[in-house]
Length: 134
Image (cartoon, rainbow, N blue to C red; front, top):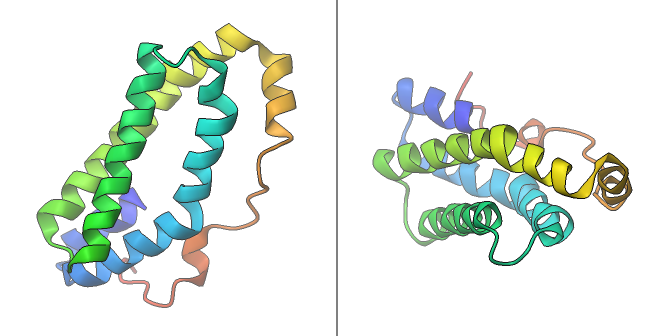
């Protein structure tokens, strides 16, 4: 999603088109992904753990951007801010949060938790009918 938003902005695609895609992708991929992270992974940490609260805060901020995009046509600044936030959040999870959770709960517990995650069969973008990034 981040790459596609940025590519659309680079190509000077109408921000409203890009915004519709961002909402679609959130509804068909990120929403379930965030919910699973929150209920399966973040729940393994103390509710006041600073890494958990940061991750939950960033999820809430992404949801706020999506609500903004649902409420009115997107503008380039909102799309840039959303893509920057999602990229920063992904890097935080990869470099800090997930290694921290793995150290806290162990590999065996993570494998057990993974059994409860919904299978991801395809990229939600494949069903999108307006590939503005191409």
